[in-house]
Amino acid sequence: MIMAASVGVALLAGLAVFQVLLAAGAPLGRFAWGGRHDVLPAGQRVGSAVSVAVYAVVAVVLLARADVLDVLPDGPVHVLTWVLTGYLALATAMNAMSRSRPERLVMTPVALALAVACLLLALG
Image (cartoon, rainbow, N blue to C red; front, side, top):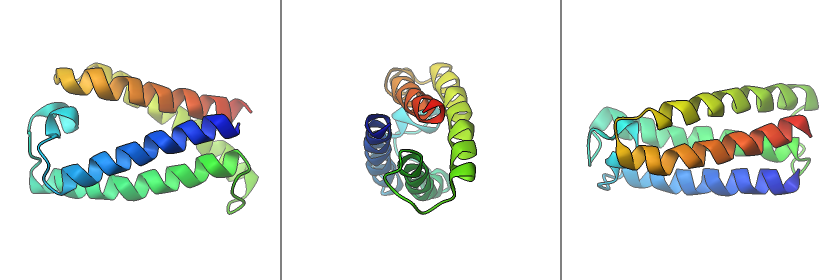
């Protein structure tokens, strides 16, 4: 389980860096948010910044499920891991349907890898 959590946290860290760059105005928008803008408009930049905090919470859940952290009760952590698995499976499908080819090619496998990591943790 530690391996699945480590992979998940590493992917989340990479996504967090990516979202910080988007929030700062880096011209990487073709990889996110449907790929409509190279530089994200203000509302999507705020969304990117907020997603960094969400990724941190998700990382804590994954680490708690792998018994690396003991900050949350086991019951809610187990339920949250299943919720994340479902959400990331949906995110995989949504990224695969994106009109943005760069988003499809990059974010679909990232979302799938996160979904698999969560599934392994949920089953563990």
